[in-house]
Length: 457
Image (cartoon, rainbow, N blue to C red; front, side, top):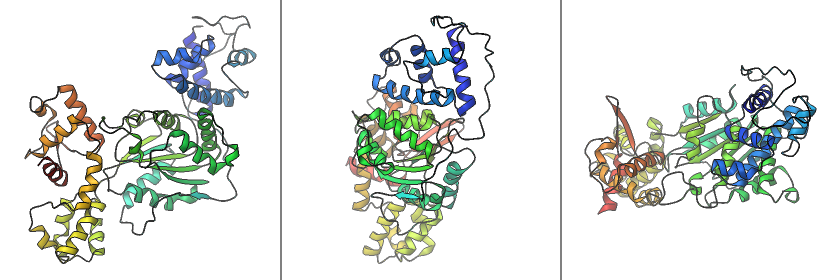
């Protein structure tokens, strides 16, 4: 039997137990291990670090241990398979061909089991650690959004990884904390942490592990820390929110590119998505992580949720500021894109300088950008590449939405640079996108357009 049939057999055994197939990296690790080769070979072939491969391998041996009922490692995986009578004889050579002893390898994939891989074990009481989460004094109606997220997390097809995305100020933190309050009783552990100060993965894992165990029990090796976190996510039902994920990414680089020394987060998030467990990790970011786009497929327990305008619910913000001329509020909300923070800052300006009269404010040339709003916009704009800035400036001077090809020969960058810049701006939620007659068109909303124009003067 050829080596690929051995791998298929292992994949079927794992799937029948866990409901998850081996991914490409796991298959590569198993293949090289069965042939007595080192992790460095896998790393070289796949263009990644050996440390990355070692973490993935540790998780693979854990999965195989659960499936085969023995402690599996790189050094003993072949011997365990021999004892399981998978090979024709102990002296069988695993090279390009492998002989099995009348083993019927089922070519059809098994269905997902109805029972979880590990029985749930719960602590004596709900453990909530919200760390430095901001206190939420007012929550404006996001009923539909909450229902969708709750269904993803607690429904039949439990989602392991959710990216909660949207431009700065749109309300990601408030929504995630409201979600926690809504579904916390369905978990053993509920944890919130902000990454605003760009902690390394090692620091984040250490912080999380100390919630589950004593600090003295925290291992020093990052691979072991990842493995322990995954064990806790299997053992307990956990909801973990990591806020401000965009702070892990580089400035003046295309969206979603990790800073030097932070690349391990990409592996960690992938493992959260790929490894079988009963928990959920939510990533809040105003810059879309690149791996999320690859992982969020129909058959994967990974979802993206892009948070948009508050819509009519934003009137609560204007009412709380005691603004007048309610018949004009919808116009104000539309101009400021239903963004809670933008509207809060603008409403304060209207109250202080226009006596709360919205109709008088709207007589000015719109939109007016409060100093606080300009500061908020400066943060994502300060991260843009030269090509992205050129695209934004060009769009700010267009009266109508334009196609990508419109930029060619209009700004001093190659077509490849322009295409990558437009895609990156989309991942930063700085573009409005419409489709007309099967043509994708791009534009800027009034607030961003005004900011770009003022920035260019």
